[in-house]
Image 1 (tube, helix red, strand yellow):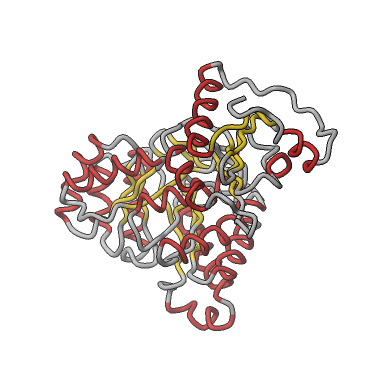
Image 2 (cartoon, rainbow, N blue to C red):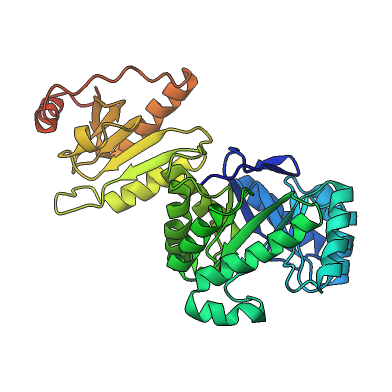
Length: 378
């Protein structure tokens, strides 16, 4: 079930029906302010809406006031083992702190952090991780790790509720995707608080991106989850890019164009992989949300590209440009991409008006046969 409670993280609403927010984490040494703020700027440009920084040492906490002041997006302090660092981070003006009540030093230390967070009016993130479950839950984890994750999270929830603090989000991350999915589904039925989604230690850009898309995407498709981090062994900008692709694929958020491309086959006369990469690279400069289809031949163009705002179908000598489900023109293959973007730019300049779609009255093959008779350049 969707979360009922909404919290505010530095002006970004989380939960309670707010858009699913994209997070990432810096890889720099936090006390290196120049490197950390440069990475935050890159993440923000890629679409990151919340950024977490590690605070393992006092020198990292001491760098936070300047980082918070320079950051274009809310900064979350990631704290483990040392409650005094959490207190310093809160005093530094961070938008939220992430703690694990199980390793922060006991209930008294948790209470200190909670009181400080309440005074500052900021939320926290709590939660369990498959790699760091409390010792008393290890036997349960041997039987069912998802149960153990949920039990650990609920213990933390109970502790914070006893302290009269309810401004928090929860995570139950696991490296095993089916376990992660089950844990979040169970937890969502038991708490009203926002949920932070992620497959922890997912892996490299390729494998980790797939695992994250399956795990996070499955939950979001069920209406579970309010914010997410794609955890990759890669440049964190890649985490943000994958996160946005997950949200766009599910129709939950819009940010920039969506490209549709055929997988290619023996009919490919143009090298559709190369063509798609060229189009995709040029689309990266567009902030507007629209769809572009790239087809490797003329056979499926009118049908498979029909739902896109624009499309192209390549050929040996000529290619076709589609606009809003109709064949727009036939042009020489060497100028096909340039002509596509000429049409896109003209449409954007005119206000992105989408014409009413008419149900295709002719089979795609017949429409394509008629299109082939269009004079070159028209």
